Image: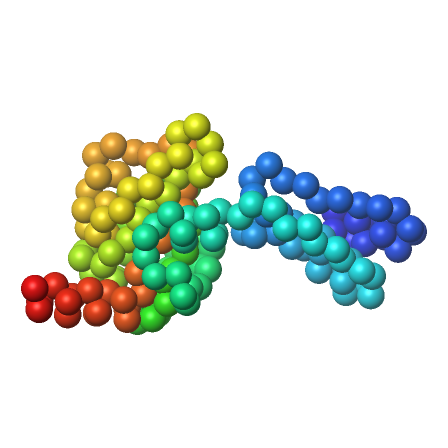
Length: 173
């Protein structure tokens, strides 16, 4: 639909992309429409809406001064390489995941980043069943293996720098 949308805008039509799942274009195909319109030399106007990225970051209790958005991790090809890169990422990481893959992703993160890495699972933001579950990757993996989650989920993981600072502080106590 992206080329068609660009043609509509070129013909003078007003086109709106609206989503009930946060800001359109963040880990969804909506960005293709905006890119096609922009590449046609036409204007794109953005009216920001709620985004689970910053909401989850604030709810997590982890450092918010520097963060990176990872979206969905690769399902197979490239997953191990991405996890190895995340193990040394200094910024707080924001990762999207589906409920049926949550426990496995948390287990993969715990293996690659360390079971004691601080994290939070944030689900169903701005909805009736909103929930923020802080903890360490290992314990979160065990929790969601025993009791699978439902709904839209964002995983927030402390960066390597914050994890090292927490370990150092815990050792001084």
